[in-house]
Image (cartoon, rainbow, N blue to C red; front, side, top):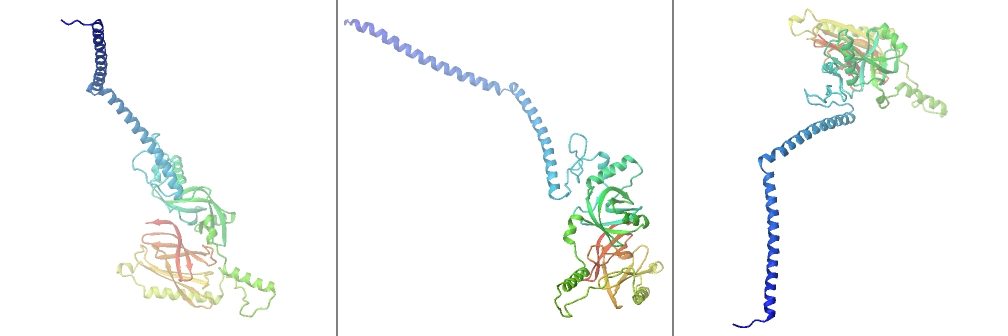
Length: 423
């Protein structure tokens, strides 16, 4: 048996101990890593189990419900802001909303034509109101019930003498009217009346939505004395663009400038101002000529204009008028028509008589009204030429119509109408 040295006997067991210690440390580290991995896997398994998933799912459901409620409230706020912006851009254009739904949780309903909520009674009344377009510039005015009233629409309901219902009607009209309270208008009426008026309130007159006006003492006195005094009203912000100077004023100004300068001019250049037209007075010869023209039109309608059905022969009648005025190319207006009471047959002839007695045929373009009863002639649009205000008759309907005289085409064209009625 070989002899071992003392060093080999001591170092051998020592090296073996160090090697075993290193192997033990490595095995311990792997064990700890495996324990951590198993712990994480067990936690994931516990989280994905049906029992553990109940509580998180309930929490997510509640959070989704809360988010939905918040989104609906935010949508209401956004819709209200969008409606206000659209109304500002389109000058009050109607904004359609969801039918049958509520706009908010307070119980009020937001009407489809307004930007603020109406009371329930006012909202129900608003559904029966029909207004003229918001961009309309001309309006018809007439004296009704000893007041000057402006027609702004139709009301398909009857308001009884109930203070609550009338207050709701005024609330709905004040909110939805195309003319707000305090709106300033320019009003033209017979007797050379041209003044500013203001909207002071709203009312209901024979199924028409009307606005009350603050007028001068002269016009207020005329309204109390005459029950059918017509007039036109124009938005004051549009009058500057349509203002016109009469031809007589321009002629007088040019003549005065010629005299002031003192420079000699030829006879053809120097023109005298035209004579002032008097509406209510005609020379005897012109008045006689106008009466003769009227009789001639009546004879034509009686002999030549016959209804197509025999049942209409007994009810058709002829009506005629002649009216003095300042029509530019004429000084007398002659109107004659033949019609039945139901207006299923109507024939009308209109003519102007000039200063030397010539007859100028004129047509009327008035849409649904086929016969006219003249009420007044006055300058309705401020162009210095008289226009015609008449009671128009259509198919089982009628109303006030104001027609302007177009000299270029020799036609009476409807300027504005209102206070309509139906049988």
